[in-house]
Every structure is written in structure tokens, then in C-alpha cells.
Amino acid sequence: MTTLRPFTCDDLFKFNNITHCLFSVTFDLQYGIPFYLQYLAHWPEYFIVAEAPGGELMGYIMGKAEGSVAREEWHGHVTALSVAPEFRRLGLAAKLMEMLEEISERKGGFFVDLFVRVSNQVAVNMYKRLGYSVYRTVIEYYSASNGEPDEDAYDMRKALSRDTEKKSIVPLPHPVRPEDIE
Image (cartoon, rainbow, N blue to C red; front, top):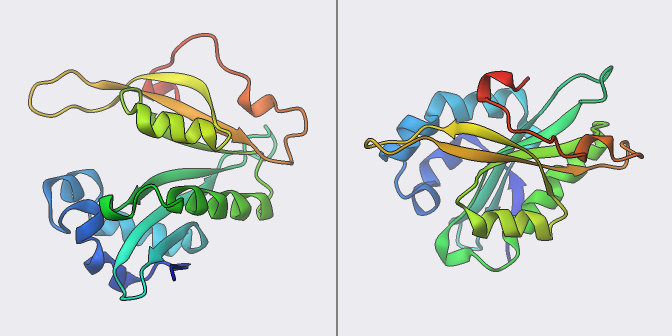
């Protein structure tokens, strides 16, 4: 039976099956231990792991609450969602997303958002199945390595019950640059 539980500091040393290797180039360059600890300290309720009966981590989600209540932009944000390859297609990502959405509802969010590479159609389609839509395209959001061009991202959103008119998910008609994101 899968256990969904809060992330702990010890989990940083169990990531190898999810992020390939704790000290891999991706881990060090993209996030790093201080980054994970910052999220754990500031938004512990948004940091959840799925654990197999034997203690192996199956996946995790980490996010935060951010934005302005006055401008109806208070929302939950998905910073990272990852499921180990051997545990994919079991509904874990959907369950982790559902939990983050429920937390965002309880905190009075208007919507949940996330960024995903335009080229990652598997993820884009999964998020669409979960009720997310493309709000805007962010030009060159992801930095490329080894001389390749930077990659665009979709900012995908799902309205929560507080946004009764669904204003938060009306798509922008034009792309934006990363520096234009608040």
C-alpha cells in the first residue's frame, strides 16, 4: 500500500530513484539541497511524498502559496512533480496534484498553476486530463545546456472554487518573457 505523507529532511537522501542520483548534475544545478530545505521550511504542507511499503520513495510534489489576494492572484504553485519511472502510470501524479489542489483550496487560493516545457507533451496532456489549461506561453523560460536554444514553457492553470467566474484561467492572447512574470 502506498503511503502519502509529509516530506522530511531524511527524504533528501532517498531521492536517487526519482531524480536519478541525489548528487546528479540535474539535482545540483536545478535545485540543490538548500532549495528543497527552503520549501520544507516555508511551505511544509505543500511538500508531499509517495512512499512504497518498503520505504522506497515513489514520487513527490513540492509547491508553495503565492500571489496577491487583493488582485485575486493568491494561488497554489506546483514547483516540482516527479514520479520514479517504475511507478508511473499508477495515478500517483494525479493523486499528488489532487492533494496540492486541496491544500490550495483550504488556503483560499483562486487557482493552481505550474510551468511545463512545451516539448513535454506527455506532461502537458496529463495536466489537461487533470483539468489544467494553458494560460500563457513563457518564451525561453527553461535554460538549455550544451549549446541548445532555451525552451519555452506553458504556464498552465486550474481554477479553484474561489474563482467562481474562472477569470484566472482566461488565456492571454500573446506570449510573455520570464521577466514579465510576477
